[in-house]
Image 1 (cartoon, rainbow, N blue to C red):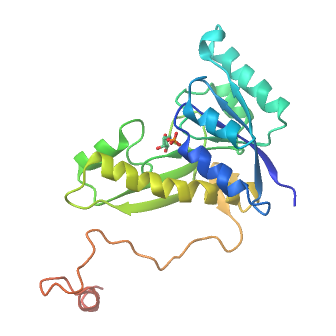
Image 2 (image 1 turned 30 degrees about the vertical axis):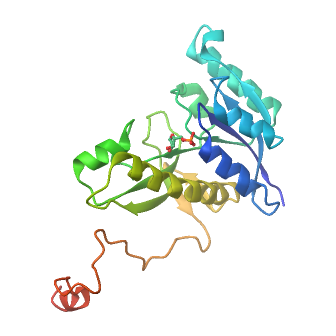
Length: 236
Ligand code: GRF
């Protein structure tokens, strides 16, 4: 199998990076992680990647006179490792239009919200203050506009009434670690492709079209609970 040579760009903790490395440790996974690049030499993820025998590079913005030159250095490193795909995993810098264009259809990102809701930072606080009962994460192709690229896959989690930001962040992060390897495998194997600004899915990967996540879940033993089957009979 021709496994897609993939590099991961990080800025910090690297837990999504670790999930991708763990998935790609299986030789039947359609992507192989060939390098991890961070804009911060102190990023914890770099150490973790090196311990897993993966080539690491720190490429700091301060060592270059412009954003374009910084991104060109990253692009050169991707070339050296013969990377075919890029995964952004908590990479905290905005990439330049030229870099994004060059990697179009081959660069993906994970965002901790169900896009297009809650773009940007502090997504869990925003979700709590909006009072949503379902939140989650999204993997999308990267385009020039931040957090706006075509969506490849999403995972949803419930937001219980008594939730706080830390608990919600942990619940979403757990979903991220499942979703990102799945999304990478879809793209690396050619089952999800960027075409005319949309993601086209090929093969039997459309997900469980019958699945419903209801939050708050109707408590089955609660006599006051809504009987959804009963309700459905009156719904046109
Ligand atoms: C994740 O929540 C990811 O969705 C966001 O940044 C965070 C990175 O966490 N883009 P980690 O470094 O992967 O642990």
